[in-house]
Amino acid sequence: MSMSAELQVSKTKLASHRVVDRAEKVLGEGEVRLSVEYFAFTANNITYGAAGDRLGYWQFFPVDNETGEDWGIIPVWGFADVSESNCADLPVGDRVYGYFPPAASVVMLPVNCKPHSFVDGAVHRQALPPLYNRYQRVSADASYSKEGDVPRMLLSPLHLTSYCIWDHLKQQNWFGAEQVIIVSASSKTSLGVAVALDRDDAAPTVVGLTSQANKQFVADTTLYAATIAYDEIAALLDKKSAVIVDMAGNPNVRHALQAQLGDQLQHYISVGLTHWDEEAKGSAGDASLVPIKSQEMFFAPTYILERMKTLAPGEFEKNSSEYLKAATKATFG
Image 1: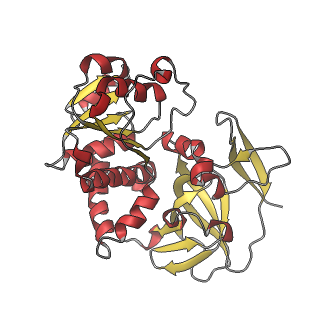
Image 2: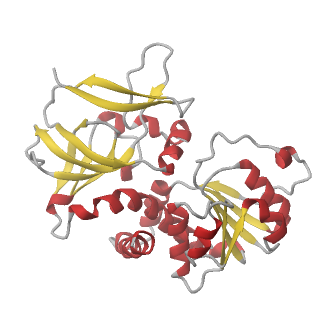
Image 3: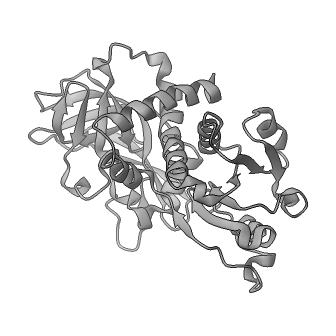
């Protein structure tokens, strides 16, 4: 019996992990087996784990846990090849880009097969965000080159979120703010947002918040009008109306921003949870802090579905594709 290795993590203790060899299932009618060649694993995947229950990430590739166990699989973006097929529309050898488990192989049930894409029609994925269930058949793309695999799997999912954040800010007229403050300014998603804002002449001033260790790197990108370290917020951050885009989810930084901006903090957008294990200290329990006027947890797949309803067919794909090329060039070279 053939075996396939997969990486599992504890749903409640993300730092705990194990590699498990599981028996490969026999393909059913219409199913295919994809051999995963490689995938990207970044801070973005930590957000998948931290929000696994809230946003359903654990449900994409469920684990058969023994009683009392809480192991799960954090999805990743990568490339795979069809190694076995019971689907006439998806032959062996087809190369695929999309959402996979960090595993040697995975079985899918392709539906809605088109020359350049298909959807995994597995029953357990029907209620999950459609964006993650759609796979691109890159073998059919005349412009495809394997040399572009790394930047694509590393940056495209993040930069698509970046594009959506910029679009959201613009549609909301920047929430009336004079400055956009990006927390964790060195992250790939943050840099993508900064690229989009830099390309928009109507955008407000963009300020990047980062650690002292990353401050020079962020400043050298020239994408931010000002680069401020977290411990400099009280001394250097202008008390002007602001909208916050937070990629890290560190409660201590959030409270420092509340303390500095007060009622000038117009809106708070939480995107990432890479600091999921950070315990709030100091001002976290300070009742004197001015409450945040409005805030949201930004989820790109939902935003895309709703935004596409307001646009002409293909318009979102065209606009975002043009941006993705520019953002990849700006951040990857």
